[in-house]
Length: 441
Image (cartoon, rainbow, N blue to C red; front, side, top):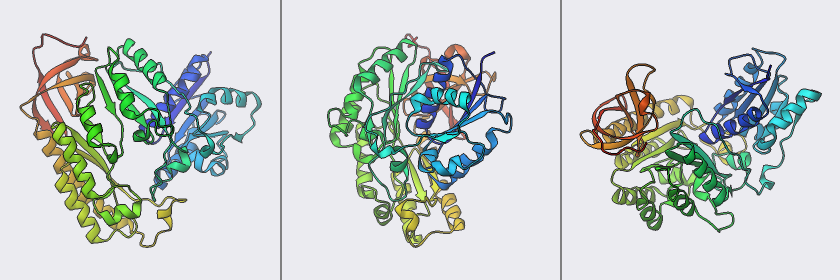
């Protein structure tokens, strides 16, 4: 009987990608992957440390993991493990601590532990790592959209962020390695590639030999890949030259997540962000001028240290002004080891909660307004899955990341079909399939 492994991932899409890549190591050795709620020989937890809440959730999952099988091995990896390895190993249930390096060795290290049962931490100095760890995934549950990690690390040092300590300095996957994986994914039937990284805009900057634009152009040449979607990006990437270039690459999805964090320049300065609100607005104008259908989403933080009522009001006004397609509103959380954690003027939880609710109302309205712009028009939708299982409705995404639902079944999976957009309900657009002479089958 094969040994079993279960995994739980906290945090971002990069973490999700890395978990899947690690699980493939176990699969290649004949292990069976089971659900995290099931009895397993090994439990793997990929942790997050972006906020203190991420730390707390990571600790909760660590303590919960062995309840089903007290004799299992517990392996903890990821950002929280990297930044607090001693704290993680001090949790009695933990057997191995790996961090954000040596992911290629997780299965080997786990099997070694099962042989000798020696608890240990293998977390090293991530700042000294200069090479991209080339993880890849060959097995996917669906055949529509594939995530591809192409960049690691961050050199930005925003005052609230621990990620440079958790992930190290910037490093990039080689152009040819990415292209080879994209070709393989196309041969497996994938229609869309999503490029992700810790600071995706920094792709290639460590050696100045290639750029993110070079990478996009390389993937765009590959037959069978119909869409290239970009993960979260630094706004300043969108120069006139870059924006014009991607506007002229038909495969690039017109959906850009550009982190804002605050709509007040004084707050942005304390955050050590590298732009002003005027520059951000100019970047949005540039994108919309060259790609009028573009969806621009963002992250906005409320309750950053010293954020006055007047500063918060500026953020609200700016959010109304720029009319985002979507926004993730989150409350500032003190992160030990960052400059912001030692700043005077920490904001109370009650004020943060109220500001979060107020700003969410604004961005919910702008989201609805964005969706309603497209009602009555037609759009190409890449279909992915049942909207609700066996409900006779199937869903997919437009290039600008609108969720669209039509009457249909799983014969639509992986197809790109033209749809008339009819009605919006709770952030989802319902439509009808249009007769088509050509599909991307």
